[in-house]
Length: 300
Image 1: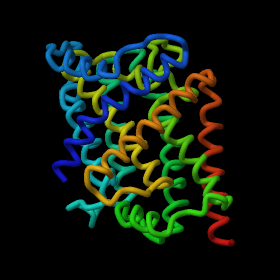
Image 2 (image 1 turned 180 degrees about the horizontal axis):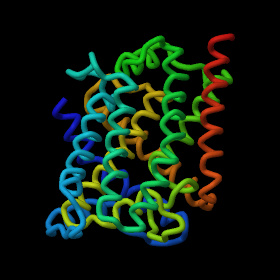
Image 3 (image 1 turned 30 degrees about the vertical axis):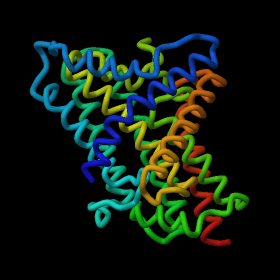
Image 4 (image 1 turned 90 degrees about the vertical axis):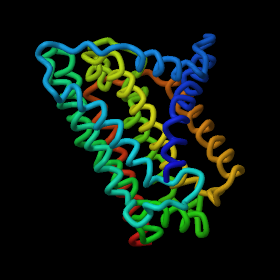
């Protein structure tokens, strides 16, 4: 359990660096080093935090609540092994709830300083999360239905032994539904642009404008860990082979993370950000795909 927590905390900035580097190379740019996210986190953690006079204690405790909630969710998601001391309570609903706790406190604290951009970012985040969280749950249910379990370690073991038929319609529908949710929940193009601070485009970044120093470092680090966990969840729902444990399984897990990260970078390069009022339609399509996958499994 402790080893997995340390692994996801240390590996998350590396995956972020690979995504940014791949995206830059696809756009004919040199781009930052793959180690740049580590440098950024260390830089912010060394600096003192500056808070608004209008901020309350929420602005101080929220970065720690968000970071702990995301790391705790990572204890229930299988990575390169399913051997975990918390297997008996690690189901998909608990993971989604922990993500929801982090989102709630982030949006609440964005309103704490009384800034216009924070309120705009939090309102957008909560409006989109009202669709994104049901879409995530439906996509997970579509996969859980095939294994008749909601425990993530047991689900990973079941999918490893039984697997999905890649040519069945329900598999393809659940795959694309989950891919849309991963793009939305990680705040990437075409849903959000993580590399801009323009008030007309930002969602997650708008909620972090009032943070600085170690608080900003913790929030950025938590976002990178959440991205890693969502990628891990996607991998073990649709590519669960090779999680027996050991060094070889760890290398295979990292390779799958890198491949999926490069896919996200490719999608960001090929598509432009869609207009904000069209994002609910995209998430709604994910819900429809998940429902169709569930119906096909029930009535097939």
